[in-house]
Image (cartoon, rainbow, N blue to C red; front, top):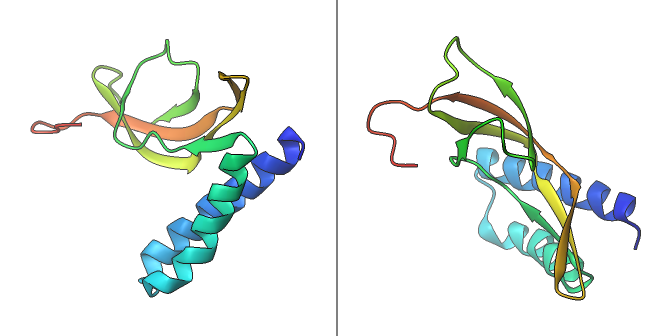
Length: 111
């Protein structure tokens, strides 16, 4: 499987997972998506969703849009596309940066 094909499938699976969560679909419907994720993992591809993680401009795995006026103490508030990694011979390579929306952390944010 090529990088482009893996990115396509992992992006579509992420979209489906988000939709399934919003629609409160029964858990057994999630199973085929999980099987596809495991299959792609066995081929050496994995998606990472950095939701809630701290963000600063030094991060190279995310392409961010800042929501709000402040740029201090940012956290990832929304993930549009996950980061996609290829693992070969024990080495991981980023093949798609996550597309995220970041905002200033609110008081009490433990993320």
